[in-house]
Length: 496
Image (cartoon, rainbow, N blue to C red):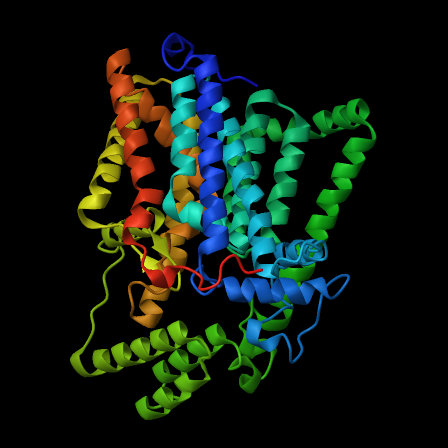
């Protein structure tokens, strides 16, 4: 499926051959960087990697789903949680017959998720334009965003979430363009699989369904006729896809419906499913339980500080102590939280700092002068969006992509981050750039399209894109190498 825009620009650089070799070179460079992260980064730095690995090992020991037991407590709940990523990783662990550690093996198996995410982002762009310069820029920015690169070589359910998200978006928009019921069905299947992978996929799935209803309008009424024709023309593949969708729907109802009926929420806390003593064996549950108990007065300051010994992770223990001290200080000196409007700018700055930097159990934020070139490029792309929007050109796909990205960002900012900020009275708590990654492909499609279409003159386009390519490449691996200390690297790589 080729895009309808950009053919007027396809007379200069890159030629089809140049594009092919450029994309191949970018893929090789991306792969080598991910391999270096997988082999060299300490296992105690990527976000919650130890817990993800521990759960994968637990799932590898059972055929279907495990039960909470003494050996699982330190890794948190293994029931009442979205389980698809752990089930897949657990089954793949059985193939580790190469003598390498389970950590390295799963890190390597997460890398294909990243390549597939880039691929479907590129296919999403191709629905919009066939301009080769735009395609080149998209692949550059997708493969040279530091936190995306870093998490892609880690054991993290975010990698599967990012892939399923961009696939769900691509197939929905492919349906809008091609009117194939099969594309719509695959989008629904990806949405259901994403909801079984991470709770934060639920709002994205809801937004996609709303977009579908808004886009189709009264056309939804003609869907049954199109479905019948699809079954007639496709045969057994249509029935297989329908069975997968039905199974995904039932599994989601079993997980989230069961949680809501039993606990009154979609994902209960560990202390609600198990006893408090058991919940304290998990570092995240222990941190949240202690801080919340201090907030509601169940524990005084001395008791809360003594309880921090239950947090069996040095970084999380330090965070727990900091949160208690900060809350105690606010009680004495008062505290005035930012309002919803005032929250927007610092939220955006922190997201950018941890998208083009790294947020884990060690942090490498990108802020100050080093983030300015990226911010300028984003503003130029926004200018291109405004100019083309006012001209009334290409407002179909891009309008819905912009609505999708905006709606998800608003949900993340206010429904999750702002509420956590108010609860813990701490701005950085739970505020990480990787949480925006489910729509990073859609966002970068918009960015690449409008930046390359800001100018009509070829020399200006090439100059602007060349600058963007340099900025993004420099902001990824070179930025990491310049700031990384010895603490970032494993003592005995490569974990054999």
